[in-house]
Image 1 (cartoon, one colour):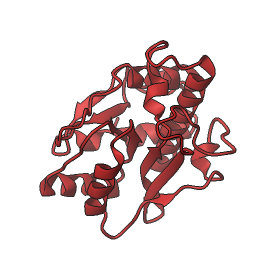
Image 2 (image 1 turned 180 degrees about the horizontal axis):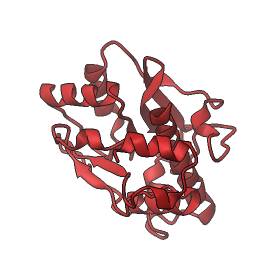
Image 3 (image 1 turned 60 degrees about the vertical axis):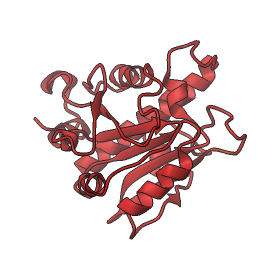
Image 4 (image 1 turned 90 degrees about the vertical axis):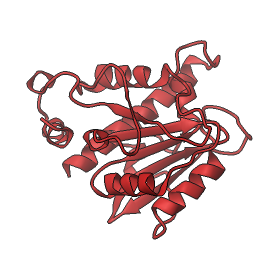
Amino acid sequence: MNWILLAIAVAAGAEARTVPADSIGIARLQYDGGGDWYANPSSLPNLLAAIRERTGVPVAVRERNVRPLDPALSDNPYLYMTGHGNVRFTATERDALRRYLVGGGFLHVDDNYGLNESFRREISEIFPDASLTEIPSDHPVFHIFYDFPEGLPKIHEHDGAPPQAFGIFHNGRLVVFYSYESDLGDGWEDEGVHEDSSAVREQALRMGVNLFLYVLGQAAS
């Protein structure tokens, strides 16, 4: 069963035991340019555990690491990218990422402080025909499971600016979600890593659950 069929089964209310364990998960995007694509190592396992425990979706225990040209890229419904430094893709990698995204994939870019300039440069090359636009707080991604009436939660201070969620839409579908001045991944990390309060970590995990369920819902629609 591929992830699109699983998404349809989950959306239709199928019980967890009727779909294979570890059938669906999150892939971490590995990139060149010098940035630490591997940052926050405990974040995605903790998010996956929260998704599994709170929703019953049989997600994987750990993330996969994939590059843009990995043949397995299209097997992943949710592609996650983070880091503090420079991001650089080749022209071939940009083409592969665009094909993945317009073909049904989803990319969540989570600025871990320092990613903004290079990410915006690269995404403008991947989608020269679309721009990042701010996602309003009434968008379903903020209300699908947990309610975020003010939109993206603030997890880390960074420059002290308010958190912003940006997106790229293709044919009406959200294909890129960019969490800026928030740092959800830090909030997903093990308790004590960043000295976040339990309330802050809970907000980050809830937003992550929302994102994942929204992606499954898009795949099933």
